[in-house]
Image (cartoon, rainbow, N blue to C red; front, top):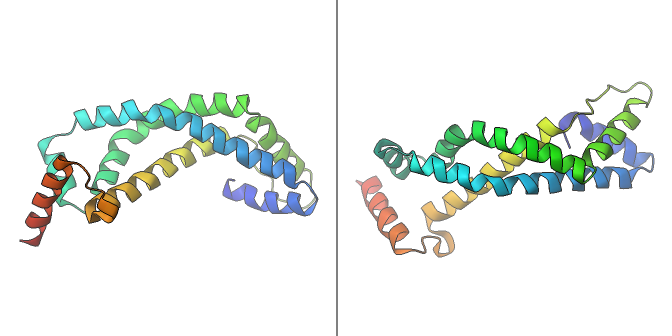
Length: 168
C-alpha cells in the first residue's frame, strides 16, 4: 500500500473491512507480477549497450555496481513498459476498483486526510523497486559466491580475475 494509504488500511481494517484491504493488496501484487515479465528484453538491451568502461566499473566497482548500472540504464524504459501493463493488469484483476473503493471509503471517514485513489503510478514504481531489490540480492550472491552462485566457468573466471585485481 502507498504510505498515505497505510493509515487508511489500518482504519478500514478496524472498521471490519479487512477483506477489501486484502483484495486491494493482492491485486496490486498481481499487477506487478504481470509487468515484470516484460523486463528481460530491456535488460538484454542494456547489456548489449555496455561499454568496456561500464564492464570494468561493474566488475571492479562497489558491491552494487551492476545494480546501479541497470538502474541508470533501464529505469526509464522499464517505467514506460510497465506503466500500461500495470494499469491494464490493475483493471483486469479489479485492483483499480478495489483500491478506489478503499480510498473512497477511507476518504468518507470524518477528520481524516484524503488519499489519492489513483494507484497505477505507485504500483509501477514499487514493481521497479522490487525488481532492483532482487537484482541487488543476486549481485551480492555472485560477488560473494554465496551458495556457489558463480556456477558457470565464465562467472568463475571473471570473478576470480576481479577478486585478484581488488586484492592488489
